[in-house]
Image (tube, rainbow, N blue to C red):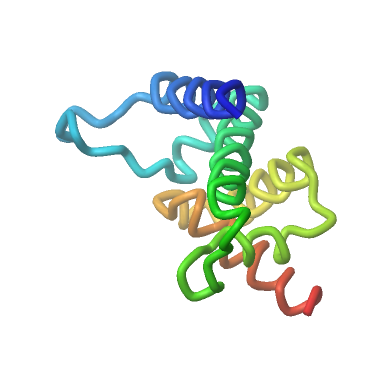
Length: 127
């Protein structure tokens, strides 16, 4: 478990370090990663970001394994069901296509795009 937490922290730190934060952000503020960051990043960095998200979900699921919270208190179960059958590469490719087809929405966060363009439709299909 310590190794998973360490790798999760490393992946998240790497993502946050590699993407430049705006000069206006305070030291205690975590920047929201947007489509603008996404389209300017390498395919490898995009995958690292997604690995960080996946690891974060795994840590939360492991933390709550004995007493999982209801869907109303955690996004993790819905993310899992909504992204069922997806891979890191398919999510990355889906985001690449979505932002290429919606250049006017580059300020939309990656999380918001994953949620509304992948998870919600996946929940409707996988229920």
